[in-house]
Length: 171
Image (tube, rainbow, N blue to C red; front, side):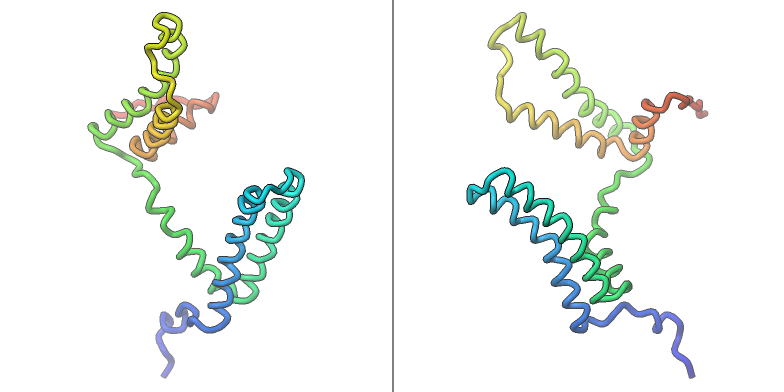
């Protein structure tokens, strides 16, 4: 009697090859920590640039080695575990009217304040606080607005840069 097809396509058992592949996978990304470490130790800019180039190449070599050690199925499994959470962060295609209004307010507020800032400084010197933290907060609000507005907004925003894009009226 043959086992069912689903039993034959099991994920790889966590043997030494899979565990070794995980170590290599983690090492491929952990070596990037050498760059800020070198900067903190006072290395020259050319040394840091050379280190970055070396790490870039070493990262690719280690990922190929990871696939060779754990096999394609094991690498696909570790990649799904490591990067699978990103798909849960994608915004929904359609959003409700309240979420759309909040997202538009979040989108417009940083843009309007950035456009008015020079005029406010000219008309009322010292009125506007010059704290960089406020500017960073407004930048974060702008980026967050893309996620609040949903995936359909990304398509609308992309259409702004397509010369041949046309509006399709919906009922």
